[in-house]
Length: 154
Image (cartoon, rainbow, N blue to C red):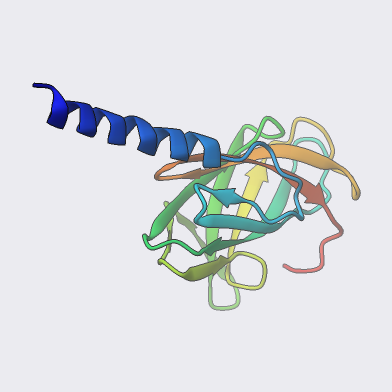
């Protein structure tokens, strides 16, 4: 009587259990870790900055999955505001609402023209420190730790 309904229910519960088990906790900034097995974050770093100032966030996102992902923002208790920036030419930057990461591809915010900026820092960021943040994707948020490094890239 309930055979087909039970199968659908069981498959749904099983799928959610697999997703729940595969979600990571907070990982260190230089560790590679998966979000649902498809997204890995590498080399999450920030530049040193004073209280009230802005810091530049750089990282690399590897999408080894079969579906594209959309990166929407970064959030942190370290600063009340953030934005994703894209450089156009040598002097101009524009605010971006999202960045598309195709399946089986990489979004490089380390060496590319893209970066995050967090402003209005609540406390100074010094080289060697770490602070928590969350990358917000269209499929959910991923908590990470960001290392503060000397500014090697602009």
